[in-house]
Length: 91
Image (cartoon, rainbow, N blue to C red; front, side):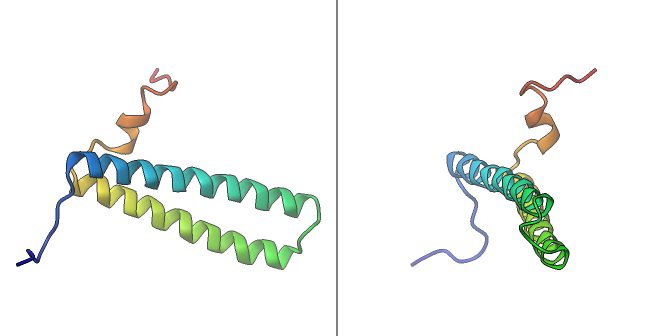
């Protein structure tokens, strides 16, 4: 009989999910940059730029919240302590 209720991911699956969320957040930033480039090159109207930028921001915020929830649920360190060793200087 399947167990119902809260499911906890194995540490491997939790890290895998975290890497997918991080990749999605990075991809959203690339999309945001390309969208801005289209606007700067006058390939899209101001109205379309504002409308779509708002949707991109909504997706970005949702991904950040999912990542925060996932880290908390799976007892992973906060984002700031994970990224600190990756070329950032903490001076």
